[in-house]
Length: 266
Image 1 (cartoon, rainbow, N blue to C red):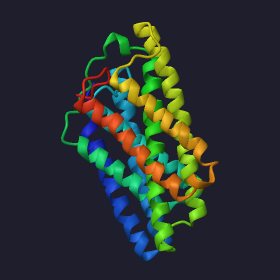
Image 2 (image 1 turned 90 degrees about the horizontal axis):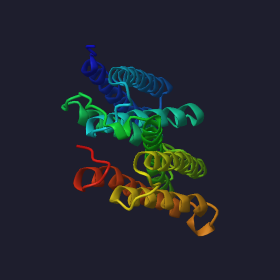
Image 3 (image 1 turned 60 degrees about the vertical axis):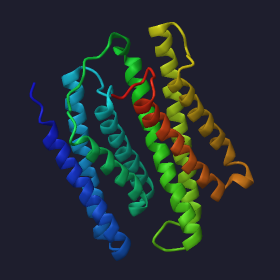
């Protein structure tokens, strides 16, 4: 089956690029038609990505997230979906610019690569694999949104500008992003443990990826409790959101590319 993947990917990249440019103009012009046009472009890019993902999934017979190209593509798709959730619910407009920019970077980084999907090894040929990986990247996407909102909170506290949402809303969105990301990542860990038991006979192993994934879960579990502690509210929570996403990036890219683990990305 001949799938025109690259035209779809380039078209999605173009839509996201134009959306980023329009969101930047929105920060300057503050015109409703600008952010509306940017939002439509994000919807178009997401629809094109979803179509490409569906075609790749159909052709491969499994969710294609087994190498660096596939994971970056899926991560960018999850980031776009996360932005759309917050935009449709809270009308954050250009406040979600960082997440759309990350989507643009991730998608742009895979364009020069080969879109071929490698054969699936028997240990991964299970619905548990699909649930584990998809929930993992969905959680990562919400953690990326929390990072963005944490940075915006610190900027707004310092600048007190009308270009950004007020501090109370940014704090609420940050806490919600962390909670949703933690909930999805918890499900990822549960399904991953069951999958590991079925495939290898144990629920947890002390490999580097498993250990760091557990650290990510513990960090954000702590954040879900920190929002009830006065000294960690506001700026402290924003800083934790920034640090936490650094841990996420190391767990995803640092270990997958630089270290030997049972979750390689090459």
